[in-house]
Amino acid sequence: MEESRLPAEDDRFPNLSSTDSATTFLARGITKVYRMGEVDVQALRGVDLDLLPGEFVVILGPSGSGKSTLLNILGGLDVPSSGSVFYRDHELTHADEDELTLYRRRHVGFVFQFYNLVAGLTARENVSIVTDIAVDPLDVDDALRLVNLFERKDHYPAQLSGGEQQRVAIARAIAKRPDVLLCDEPTGALDVKTGIVVLDAIARCNAELGTLTVVITHNATIADMADRVVHLSDGMIASIDHNTAKKPAHELVW
Image 1 (tube, rainbow, N blue to C red):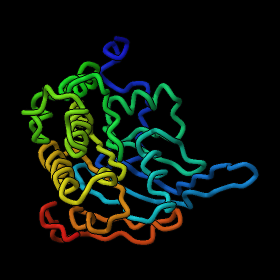
Image 2: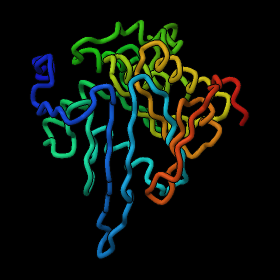
Image 3: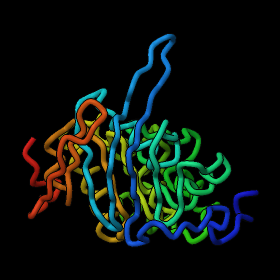
Image 4: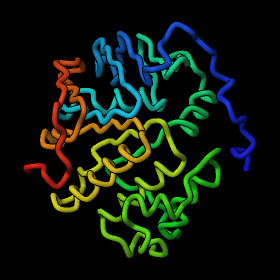
C-alpha cells in the first residue's frame, strides 16, 4: 500500500525551533468561525492551551462550547481561522492537506462516540487496518489485551456489545503507538457500567503507553480521572483545574 512507503521521519514538516519540544501542543489565539448561510458562527474565541507528553486531560463543557472544534484542530482534522497551533516543533496551522494526513497517520489516534468499525471484519482485523500501515505498531493481540478484549478477537462487531466495540476502537487507535490519543465523547453512547469499562481502558493506555490523552465530554464526573481539567465555555477557556489525586474509573461517582 502507498502508506507503507512513507518516510520514517516527518520531514515534510518545517523544523521550527521557536517552540519547546517538551510541549506536545502549543496553541495560541485560536479562533474558528464557521459561515452558516449569511451568519458567522464563532466556535472558538482566542484559545491558548499547552498540552504536555503523557498527560490525561479532560476538556469539559456543554454542547456548543467548542470542545469538538478544538479537538479537531489539534488532531489536524480542521484548521483555525486565526492563531497558531504547534505539534512539538512542527506548525500545523499552515500545513497542507498532505502534511496533515501524514501527521494524523503517524502521531494521532482518534476515538469517537460512535465506533466506526468495519462490519465485515473481526475485532482483530479491524485493529490490523491500522497496524498494516503504521511505522512501529503494537502487536495486534497486545493492543487487544491492553483493552481486555483478546478473548473476543475473532468476533465481528455485530457479536460485540457497545462497550466492546468501543474498546476495539480504542485498540485500533492506540495500535500505531500514537503520541496523542484524542477521544470525543467516548462514553456518550454507553450506559454507566459500560462507560466505566471504556474509561478504564483509555486510562490504561495513557498509563502504560505514555500517550498524551485528551478526552472531551460534557460529563463532569469524568474530570476526576484527569491530571488537568480544561473548562470550555462559549468558545473560550473559562478555567483550568489541576487534580492532586486522580480517581480510577471504578471510583467515579455518577
